Length: 253
Image (cartoon, rainbow, N blue to C red; front, side):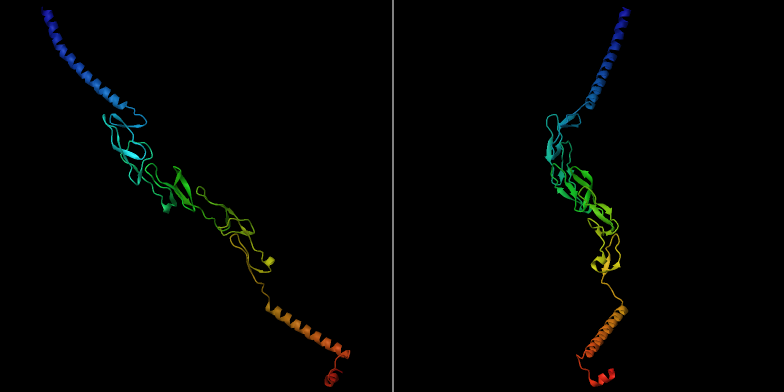
């Protein structure tokens, strides 16, 4: 009887402990399974995760107004002017539209709409150095060729200007598409005033003459004319083709 009493007493004491242990274990299992469920949730590509739920995404051009619940789907709202959303999303705000900064050499190629951002392109005289989504985000001004060089390739919206050096006997101020040969003053019956350089043409002017040489030439020409006139007069007189006054005749004889 004593043994039976001891067994019953032990069973009575152990039973509550066993039930408590099972309850505690069950609660731990529930918590662990819950955490595991939360961590193991994998949403579809067209869904986004919010808490323990996978909510349907909003389409491009829209944003999430209210997240979904167990009983209601996601509530979406259209993007306002000046904002856009180019992909399905689970975001609460649309993205602000980009601006094309003219001070940075950019202009609008395509205006911003609710499903796509603004697209920029380089202004005239600039080329793009950073392409972005079919447009340009950074532009740089075309280089200017230095004097003595010519433009061997014009700059485009995607490439810079290329310059090449002029060869000997030609020149360019840096804005020409090819170097020009120096003017040959002698060929134009002009006098060379200043020789051409790689960046400037030769300077020509009217030929100048020495004043002394001109005076001597004129006097010599006059002397020849006077001498020729005297010779003609003497020859005609000798041939009796002209009459010389008696006074001159006496002087001549």
